[in-house]
Amino acid sequence: MGPRKRVLLLICIMVTVSLIVEAITIGILYRTALNEAQARLVETAKSQARLIEAIARHEARYGNSYPEGAREATLSQIFDAHAHYKGFGATGEFTLSRKEGDKIVFLLDHRHYDLDNPRPLPFESKLAEPMRLALSGHSGTIIGLDYRGAKVVAAYEPIPELDLGIVAKIDLAEIRRPFIKAGLVSGLIGLLAVGLGAAFFVKVTNPLLRKLAETIANLQEALGKVKLLSGFLPICASCKKIRDDKGYWNQIESYIKDHSEAVFSHGICPDCAKKLYPEINLHDKD
Image (cartoon, rainbow, N blue to C red; front, side, top):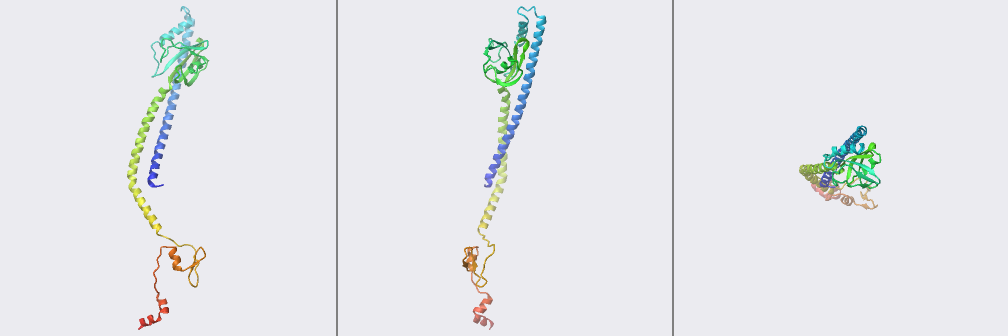
C-alpha cells in the first residue's frame, strides 16, 4: 500500500472512530434522559393516583350530600382540576379511564384529538397498551402504543378504590428529537473538524511523502543495479573454472559476468608477461 493510500486509510479510520464515539455518547445521554423521563412519569402517575384516592376517601366520608354519590363527586373534582390543564411538554398528558364491559372508556379529555367525546377502545385492542395494564391492576413503565397508535413512554398506575386507571405519558419522538438533532449537528461538526485536520495533515506530510517516494525510487534503482555473489563457489584448483548449480564448469570470467554487473577487460600481469614474452622483458632490461 502506497503512502497516499495509507493517509486516506488513516483519515477513514479517524472518521469512523469519531462517529462511533459520538454515537456511543449520544446513546448514553439518550438512555439517561429516557430513564429520567420514566422516573418523572412514575412519580407523577403515583402522586396523581394517590391524590385521587385521597379525594375519593374524603368524598366517601363527607360527600354524601352530592346528588350522584361520592364517586361522581370525586370525578367532578378531578375533571374540574384538569379542565384547564393541557399536559406537559409538547405531547405529554394524563389519561384517566375505566373498564366498561370489554371497552376502555376514557374519562379525561384527550389532548390530541376527540376532545369533547373521547373515543372508547376495545379492551383487547393493540392500542392504549399502558392504560390496559393500569386497568388490569398493574403498575410500572412501558414504551408502547397509546390510544392514537403513537409510541409513547408511559407510567401506568391503578386506582383500586374507584376501579380506574391513570396513565402519564409522553411521545417517544419528543424525547428522541433533541438527541437526533444533537447527533446530526455534532456529526457534521465532527466531519468538518476531521476534514480540516486531514487537509492540514496532507499539506504537512505531502513534502515528506514526495521525498520518501524519491528515496524509495532511488533505493530500488540502486538495488536493481546490484547483484551479489554469496555462498561457496566450487572452483577448479588447476584451471580455475567454477562449477554452476547445474554442474557445468564455466570460465571464471563468464561465471562472474553472468552473476554480477562486472565487465572484464583483459591485460597481462608482469609475472605472466615475463613468462610469455621474455624477449619484451629482455629489451626492457637493455
